[in-house]
Length: 457
Image (cartoon, rainbow, N blue to C red; front, side, top):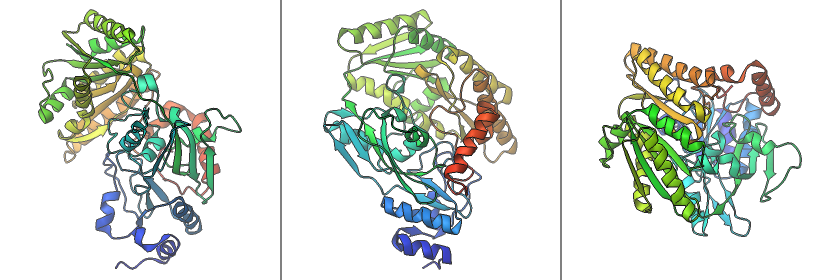
């Protein structure tokens, strides 16, 4: 039995000792997210809460004892947003997993620890659908999706997390409990505080529940797969397609990503292709086939070597799974720095060409996968963590890619969040005045700076 400090003994008395972890070996699993931040700290404890009441008690305790708190979901984040901080309490919400579907209002009441895929499955039992679909949907939690305003493969047509949030329960830094919004589809009473907390990455409050909008089950899809000699020609096709129709999915994988997936799963992908474009249409009736034929024509006009189309849902899902597997397959190639930069769609070719130039300039490998239809790319910088020169070049390339995106009128993060790994680049994108306003909002809601210190700002 580990002896508790007086402060932790007070917390244990307030929330229950059974949910408090102080053993360093057990805490190790809660120190990092998938970004694997090398500067991660050691928390004073990990608390795995089971209820909003425990979160309220925890934040009241944190205010009394001036203890920082790092909220944490499933730990699948890619920007170091839930990296542990020395001496802070890691507040894990992974046990809060309840899901309730309200069919008449087409809504779901969801606790933050529920996995994205479980919300989808619960909705599907009633012929409904929750659209946001990160590639990590089987392991990421709704709380983390809310914290980063996550997107996914279908967001090109169906939008991102914030588009489906009708209500939130939030605990502020001082322990006040806010219930914002609800099952109402339209509600403009007061300031839009609801949207303020979506994407705030645990810096303004702890989300303990959400009311999510559901939609009818998606219609059947037709799938197109096209291979291109270069990433640039594939990007040109994306721009051309986006100018005339709105695909329900438009994903891109470069040659390295294709071969990484093929090495891991042997799915029959064309290893010689410079890029693979995966697109889908779920337009009603004959319009679906018209859209696929238009996409196929535009792909050929922009240099596609092979264009394959199918109405078979199992075939379409096979290619979708190949795209979802790309990050895991690349992970085996070395240590990774994960980018999430986006630009206006017409500038996608310039971004991808610029990333290739950065890879050559810094002599690093940067495979790219992308939610190409909305201009959101995921360049992955591969490096050797035990080679100081490799680390230096990787960090320089990481910064250069973000600067490139900003110079093109883009963003340093489309869906993963700023976390701790990208905070140095945020002022370059937002500017001094926006940063000042952001800090003023943070100071108003968290004057002691207790919530997720070091993240975002």
